[in-house]
Length: 260
Image (tube, rainbow, N blue to C red; front, side, top):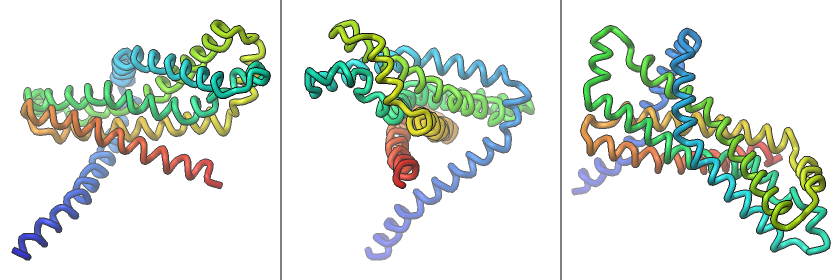
């Protein structure tokens, strides 16, 4: 009884460590075969186009509504005398630095990440990966590497679009609906957003989140069981693990960048 308990406990402890080791080895294999990005850039460009089209609408619409909410919340909490002077400042640094990368990464994981996991898993279930291997082509280099780097490159672009659309949403609320002077809005926004602390920090976060989400997505697809149930479980794990990883990385990056 005690031996079985200790064995089960040991298995629960060692299994996550073993999975982390396999995932890290998988990441090193991707890096080792990333030369195809330079030899055949068309493969990566196709994936950027596919992932961008797949996620663009939902990310743009979400950015617009986040901009609405930030500016509306700023209006409700600002004194009427000072609102006009602070229009354009309401949440803009947080939108560019925090909300843009984090919300984009979460939407990206739920939309493009699960799609890539399912695509690779179904290729595995349909023995297409085995067929590619029989033809003498490395399936990791042909299938995984272009999708991985396509998603990593697409992620900062989508985060930039999210923030830009969010700013336009704030402009619609402040300038069009409330009647704040447009020049004052853009002037206050430029003074509120810092290039190094906000834009550069948001860019670095979006790149790190892109690496994390894409590694989880391709790994889960590559390791999924070649059955419909196995692929479905892999897509679910992609959403859960990617979302938790993005939030944990956001905490760590914020502490490192702004802790001092």
